[in-house]
Length: 589
Image 1 (cartoon, rainbow, N blue to C red):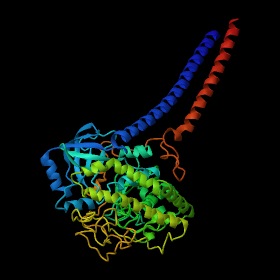
Image 2 (cartoon, rainbow, N blue to C red):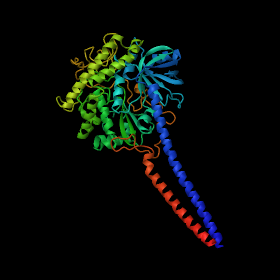
Image 3 (cartoon, rainbow, N blue to C red):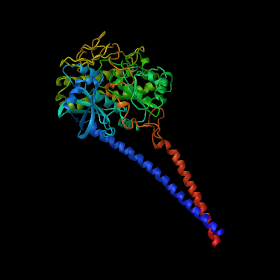
Image 4 (cartoon, one colour):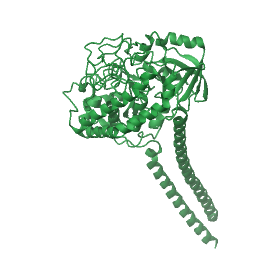
């Protein structure tokens, strides 16, 4: 009987030992599988990014975008451009064919201005690959904007600004020059810009589940000043994601306006880079300008980043004078807490000045910027010359290119003096002033075109050549107290702009301004990626405020302890099995 019990115990121990060993191997296999999966995912993302960079948004060549659409539909779309009607089309994007693509006009002030023209129907367009098929995309990209280059005789202000933003390390959408064809006829030479969509967020943040907002000129709150703790009060911050993630935006606004721990809710370094970008390119059609618009806020694990957007008015396109780098706002500095609060911290101001200095000594330095402008000009000049719907003559383009170089040299020289302390970098808190002069069309007399129709209180330059081929505003504007242009081609300071008419003051406008909207309030199908996955930590490494990596890294310590316990138990069982075997054999002898 005793011998039988010993045999039974031996069998049980052997079985337990085998199970433990299998479990240990399974744990190791699972861990390896997870690690391999993450490596595979990272490799796949990198591969997709490379494909997008070469096939969709190359920087060294112009690609063809061919739209095939019913002629009556296309004519109706142009005849009713303000309605932004969506039509069905087929699209060949650099040789990649897609059917059932949504196409519509897009824009805000520029759209209304072209609508009011008698001799142009050169509308910016939006391609929505997922309009009818939620799973359809162009290498992960759901929407692409085709920008018509309104008010830019040089054709390259937006291209160069996005390139600078990318070099500064800001999250930047894909962009490239394209020839747009409609039914096999050349429609125009445009700039393609990726929509802020899932692919953009995945590429820049490694996720797309965060809350996303867009600052718009309509409504209240796009200046990021504190109103109250109700998200509905901030109608100027249009929610573009499906989820608000527990109204974390309110927490950020509260801390920004009423607290001091800014890094808790803001990626401070990235925010400073965003502010610097606006100053370096004299882009007042942004958060720092009178309209307080054209930026996104993306929340990644509780921390917000400011995303750059819409730079056709960069390099002084709105006619602003040289900006005070520490007080660059149109209107009181205190009314832009994102600037006022961060620059009030000595550490952050020093960081901000270093960011600016890196750009003025790098990409924007006289020699480097001149060389890059000439490279881009050589790449696009033939396309500009053959553009059948251009707002400008080819001669105006040729004149605008060197003026763009001059404008940058003037701005950089002024900024360098401010950094050196030889001229003031701040004032009495009332801001840098400026207005929306210089944004008009004409560029030297090709035609009389309305300048940003529908705006009031505009400061208007009288020098037609002031801003890279820009003319004085035509009808549709109320040019109160219009100053003359300064000798360096920049407009004198004037009143900040008022919001344009005809805008919906709700947080979710029916017709998306500039088309920067996730159609239907979110992404089709999974919308903004659904709930946060388990184990997700911070976004990209190196973010201010102690942001960590994401994915397996945050869960790694638990996995290591579990493996150690499994190995320990296995060793104990093996030891017990050895004792039983030894004891059993002794009895048999």
